[in-house]
Image 1 (tube, one colour):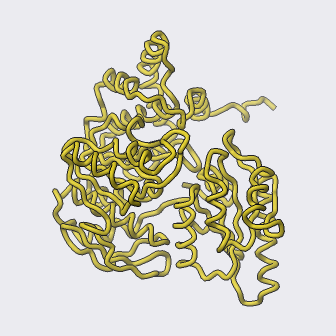
Image 2: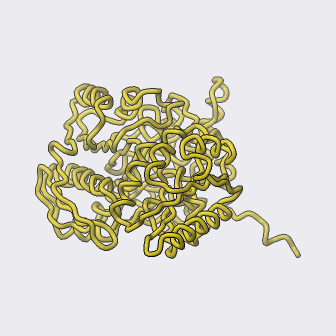
Image 3: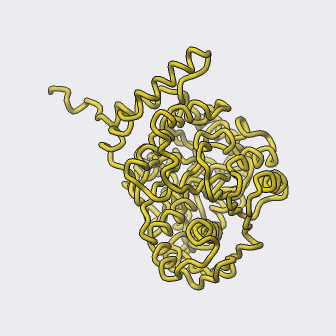
Amino acid sequence: MTGVENTPSELQQVYAQILSRAPEHDIDPTLERVREVLDMLGNPHRAYRTVHLTGTNGKTSTARMIEALVGEYGLRTGRFTSPHLTSVTERIAIDGVPISEERFVETYRDVIPYVEMVDERSLAAGGPRLSFFEVLTVMAFAAFADAPIDVAIIEVGLGGRWDSTNVIDGAVAVLTPIARDHTTWLGDTVEQIASEKAGIIKPGATVISAAQVEEAVGPILEAVEHNQAHMLVDGEELVLVGRAVAVGGQVITVRTPGATYSDVFVPLHGEHQGHNALLAIGAVEALLGGGRALSANLVEAAFAAVTSPGRLEVVRSSPTFIVDAAHNPAGAEAMLTGIDEAFTLRNLVAVVAMMADKEVEAFLSVLEPQVSHIVVTNMDSSRAMDSEDLATIARDVFGEDRVSVADTLPDAVDAAAAVAEQYDADQVGLGTGVVVTGSVVLAAQARILFGREA
């Protein structure tokens, strides 16, 4: 053996170098480092129009829908989303396709000299190097300008005000539903979190907002007024008029200030995806049409091809295995509503792993009324809660008899399948499904286990 087989690829080497920096959830409240690097690169983020998205749940699905709509108009798109499921290259997509490993490495090589110059300045002043997420943000903006693209769809990494993506001047700001999450970094209350997320609203922008809980409304309205922005809200100017479950998704009718779009097929499950589609249409009307109607034919064509990996995604049948990246109570509620609507299941088994900094008990409490049995497990992350600690909380919520523990995800999948088969053996004719949920990282590992690609 020569050992060549074990030599890391260039992508793996580059990814390791980026990972050696501060993690993406470690926010340092400044945008100056990213601005400095971008200025040295000629401000590539100013070479195209941008749509900026924040919120607690639904950002990536909505971003993919906006991307599809813009692309259907013949415009080149760049999409920056996080986290990734299978490969870091997924975070930077051009025309709906993750950039190649070669292009990812080339982009890193292009920007790293400038990143290191700013690193040195920051360290000399007593500050940190650029973080993992700051470097990826710079890379995305550079790759988009080099393509070149016409419209960038940019999802924040965490929060909004101090997120490194907030160097852009988004003509359209999209706010998906805001709830408690990332409280360690964004604040303990929905009001505080909403204030941070509303920080992406720029002067004169059009704001497309989901229906928000009462605590989130005040900070958003304050930011809109301060920036003399124009806001359209789901349930007011934007309306999901009707929706019906269909094979492989749903058919929706939506009304915006520009038009009514009737009987549009969306190949995604759950009412929340209908509302995400509404936000996407509103955003693209504002971006491309100045609020005027889009082509109904193009809207239908765009949505027909939309995918959202790891969101109510069926990865196996007999029993049905569903992967969903829900990781907070609001996400769990949307997931369960979607499962109840789209799948004929009388029993549901859950495979769960979670990050230790999440609202674990609240998440499990949302699952408990609809989940017959839960299998808790570990996942590959330094932030993950140990399965035994998770099991202790799960037993308090579910009771001893409804909780199993498995050390690894493959073992957890096998255990969940066995439980599902036992339910079906005891209750002839009743369907049992398994949902793997609790973390984006777990969803990613499950998709790999079941042979899915992003």
